[in-house]
Amino acid sequence: MKLNIAVLGGDGIGPEVCAQGVKVLKAIEKKFNHKFTFTNGLVGGSALTAKGVPLPDETLELCKNSDAILFGAIGDPKFEDGNDIKIRPEQGLLKLRKELGLYANIRPLKVFEPLIHKSPIKEKVIKNTDFVIFRELTGGIYYGDKSTNSDGTAASDTSNYSISEIDRIAHMAFKSAKTRRKKLTLIDKANVLETSRLWRKRVKELAKEYPEIAVDYLYVDNAAMKIIINPRQFDVILTDNLFGDILSDEASVISGSIGLLASTSIGEKSVLFEPIHGSFPEMKGKNLANPLATILSTALLLEHFKLYEEADAIKNAVEKSIEHHITTPDINSTKKFAHTTTVGEFISEYIMDKKNILYHVENISLGQSTII
Ligand code: IPM
Ligand code: MG
Image (cartoon, rainbow, N blue to C red; front, side, top):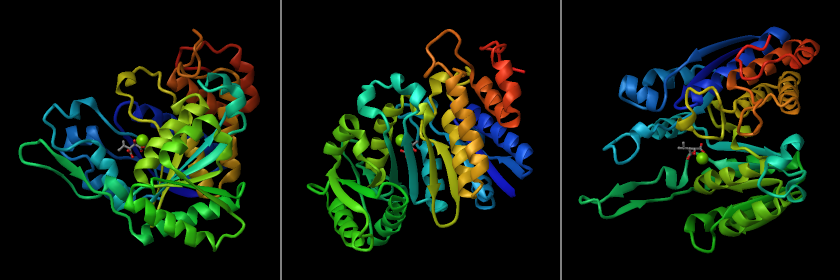
């Protein structure tokens, strides 16, 4: 298969983890005889520095003309409030989502058996947790009118949702539930917010079209607690933009590290794959960031194009890297942790030549970037 992939590394650790994703996709390309073309584009703080805007036109064009986008992370302390900044790097990502119509952000959460002890939550609580969050991505308070008064003493953000915005992601979530454990939970704040009441009303109506799906409704404060005390009760979570942002970071602690969670953003025109973690600027350039979320995002990319065998090859290799402790310090607290590039190399090599790399595992001098 021929695929044109736009690579937007972004800020902080984004470019480093994306480079590992590309490395792994190149191994897949070789092993399975595909033709992937990678083109880099600037976004976020790095685009602001180079071009004065967080999403240059050429980056948007590149994304529109690509089959898929691999995205790193966005956010740079240089552009934090207090530095008298008018445009923030994050605006690049928000504009990209809107321009490409990426209205559904799908964030699967699974527990990796060998890492279960890394979670701050008890093993018996999180064992076999397996749910997916469908987060609405182009509406709500993120995109409503915003204002600050002239003397900076008051500000407002507005949240808007229309039925059509709710319907399209709700249908997607219901369809996903059909292929899973047939349960959907709408998370909202319908006891307070008008938009949440609309979500609830609509989802109740749409549920009639999916009689095989058990639907329940939770207020977000209550759900935030239940995700921690009984995460196994969830199968498909459907929620709005802001709640989805918050709940997916919360849910990531179940897996032991936010550095493990991948996501797909999908919509009318394009499809984008990214780790759910942020740009982690403190870790930038240290070769210590966990590339697994990005590498697992490349598996989601391949699945999107129905390249299931290829996606499985990546997922198996990731499991092997975890099993053999070829992992970064966030999930490997021993002195023998691996660097970002080493993890990427191990996974690529494992995909290319399983037996050989396992033979070499014993000889790998961890902490060095070259393993063969
Ligand atoms: C995410 C991030 C973004 C968001 C930021 C970087 C704008 O936190 O993708 O979850 O809030 O959507
Ligand atoms: Mg977030």
